[in-house]
Image (cartoon, rainbow, N blue to C red):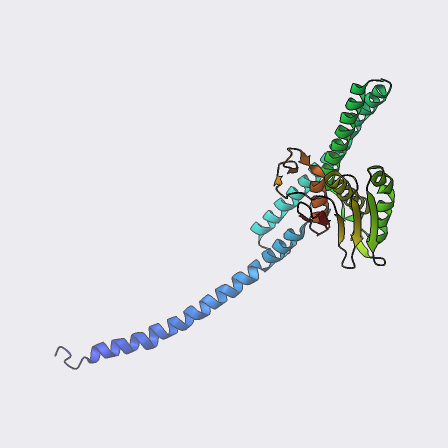
Length: 290
């Protein structure tokens, strides 16, 4: 009779809601939840490997470990990363050998040339000797910069930063006094820091030489070590305008020269989890803090 009361439509609607939409909705929720949990469980070893990889250092012999619960595709990626780190370590070792060889091969003829020039009583020979000294200094800085990439973890030892800085000040005092300047050390008691002693000595020397270069004669240089492990080298010189740009091999100064000393200090600071900050202005002196 053509269902004038629409019983068929209401029954079909009820059946669809009660037997299809409600069960399928519940199943959808359960399926999505189970999928999220299973994917999270499957990717948990991947997240752990990512955190471990982020903490890896090419200078360290450690490598990523493969978890038994790790998917085979991810395990292959981990093995590839381990091979990459191994090749990187080999390259860094080769760079260390190359840097030492270049330094030795160039330093020897320059030393012989300096001895020969010393026998010549001529003002031009003295200028050539000064150029050789500058070349040797640049060579030492470039070699030191190259070797910073191959510092091993075993080189970091617990050291008294205050005593180390005071020793460098004592060693540098004759040079500073010869330049017509003064130098002093200020600090509290022993400050124990995990560091590479030779590199931090290089930092103090470079910062003192930087003050001498910018400030000139008659300047007072103060080296300070604070209880928080920071090291500051300040002077009361004429100061300078901080308009240096970072170049490929170091800071390109307004004079056009390469400021490799500060670049070396920055790299050493980064290796120790620290940072270099410089404050200077014309007429106000300058201060470098690590």
